[in-house]
Amino acid sequence: MEANNVRYVSASVIICEIVHGQFYDLLEILKIEPMPECNYIFLGNYMSIGFYSAETFELLLALKVKYHQCLTILQGNHESRNRTMEMGCMMSLSKSTAIPIIGNISLMYLTI
Image (tube, rainbow, N blue to C red; front, side):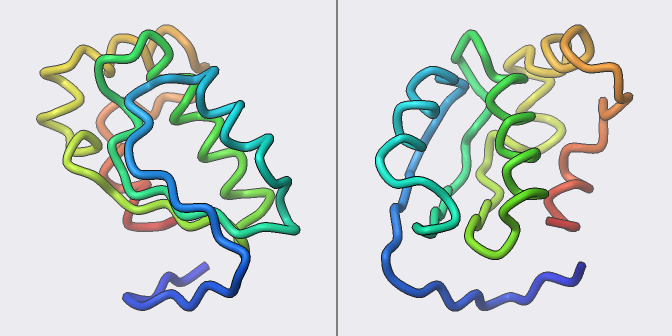
């Protein structure tokens, strides 16, 4: 799947600024309007100080696979390799997933 620099999103749209690993808050946001009836734009910073950074990131990736037409995920400054190492997110990811994605977070954003 190829991603363009410009993405046109039709109404209705919910724009989410910063999630910061708040998994249960993300679940509440997603209850506002279900996909695919509503488009979502996430502006970055999914992984950070929140206790559930890995789960938050993994849920967004799974939703992107299922609802790729109505979910836009932008890369924030917290999704860089250096920033995730600083925040301890890599350890959280390595413990929570069977897929070896350590070190590939930046690469994932280039492909979604």
